[in-house]
Length: 308
Image 1 (tube, one colour):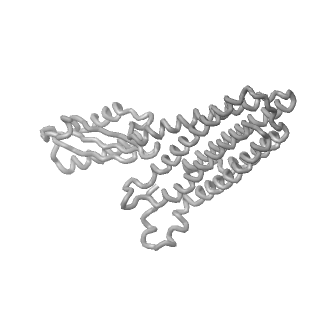
Image 2: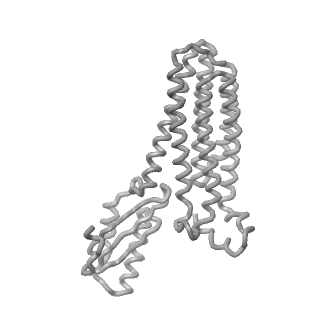
Image 3: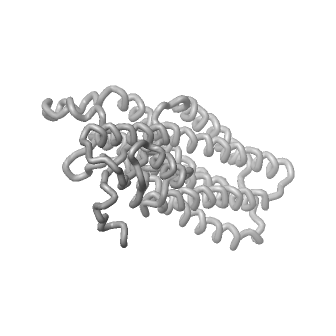
């Protein structure tokens, strides 16, 4: 993300207007999705109270979460363009993940609250306004379908994420529509709280998954699907390498992988050493490491870290 940073420096403030062309289209799409979702959430909350439907209210909460994700994504797609600066030497990639993580926390809590509330009232017979529910669900399908269609095929990770959120909303509304039709024709009011429970469980499951993944990234755990042993083996096949240690890998935002490693080498020839570092870097890039820091040591150099 940091590559189009350099040429903005000399231009004063107006240089930020076109933000490296690449991002501006994506940001505009995300901005649209954010305002659209926000307006829509307000309509849903009102609709939920009007139709007395727990399922519609649960969907409204889900949409509110998506608005938060999209708002964070929009703000961060602008921030990420700044690239690296004096305070954040790795750029702003991790903020995007943090926005998603915090939203997942909010969603997990709200879905639990709604679950408890719905389950406590599940015995009370109440029949929601089925025709109103059908109208809201049809409107929801149309609107979210349009927004998803506008965002599909987006190139950035943020846009793809936003598209998936909108597709989930489309499914949520389809479920509400089916539920409303069933209630309308059978008079079974219980379908509404059951639907609400289903939607909340789905939201909770996704939120917990995002939280787990995000916490792993924040705690610098090994990137998903990253095979440390394979990297060590590959590095040890390089000429002049007699051993490796102190190898660490982590990810900035789930995508960008960073690795540091000490290589023990049996040569003190400067040309050979620089060639080796270059070869190691290229090999690591081929194995999915975007940013490698490699330190070379002679075996007799007692590495102070090896004994810890």
